[in-house]
Image (cartoon, rainbow, N blue to C red; front, side, top):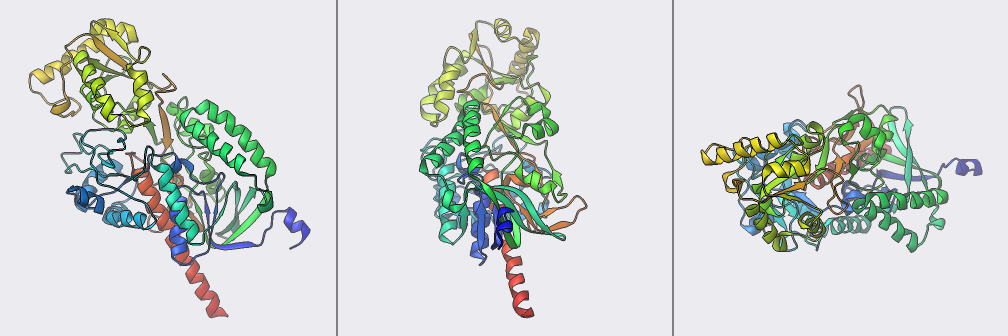
Length: 547
């Protein structure tokens, strides 16, 4: 290689498979490809983990997993399929969903083979995330009307056995498994372009520090601190990330790596690309994204280089839950006109989508004093570690409004008094007359609003840094659902290019419930890795035959 070639970034590095992004999907793709005999290079803009590292580490699985059986939970593939068919809509075909459901128990076994641990302690109450006493829970809308009447409810949120947020353990076990299998990992590598040969993708161009110029442990710690801050305190995280990114780019030089079989894009979503959010989901523009700096649409940018098709880019999942405490499910959620608009039993993201997109991102939880006392009494036993500051805010003087009457409460929070009192009157009348709830809420969590004083909790975004409301993007590159290969605008698959996780349209691209994104990362990552490795094997055989 000449000096001129090196200056242009023309390395002589060649692998069977190159994975761009080392989060949950990237790790699963790398493991699957390595297990199939492929040589694998993984490039990550940071030190790996992505949004997966900061997630709850929940995998949506069912149909009779070993964990469910150990817990005595009855479930079947048909039952799980019926629920998910309604939940995901047209995000994937019936054939793909059936394949995911039928292989769900084996997926948990595969994860356990990588070193992950699951446990069947079922959470007995509805929550957005269980405490360290429980690791199997109802993580979606299974118990809500419209879902429970078509599929027998079963807890399918398989939380990785670890204290507090389990995402770090989820990723670290997968990372360690990949490295044990011989996967090469290059951190601080930002992919700038695809290398195209005819109609095929044969490698990537990237910028990274040379191996002998890698920064020390201190820089790694600072980078991870910036990522954590971006999740928990967005503005501080953004400021620190700017410093980290500037330093990383100063150290970086241009490089190339070639792939004999394929490049897999698993670089996360695009929530931190405000231009894309403004373009495809303007209702979410003023809301903070949930994730890391790498969720900037890298996969979309690289896909655009080869005219890749995209879909579901306007599909978002908002993070606002009213349980725990589960007692709050007895209340009603109203918009700025004091009008109820959703079933309070719904999963947080299911409820917040209409809130943001149809009700100007403004809503309040309204409860009476009996429900307030019940909810407050539940905080000690139902609050996971990250719920503590949220509920301290909600029950503190700044986190709620209180008034003797609903009319006075409406005035205090700035909603229509006429609308709120009429909504409460109708809600109470339906209960008194034995009529079904207008939005399908189950009778066991219906409670008359009649015991003053009354309380309101503002569910809108940006009410407090300790009561965050964030979102993730669900759309991405369109892929062939049998292989994971990216599809061009003209409908053809792009030879040598794959996508997985939140870089691709997948199981949760219409409707997100906890655990479905990580399950899709495992499902789509393994699919892409296995197919790319199969291409590598075929290429090797053809080369040997020609020789």
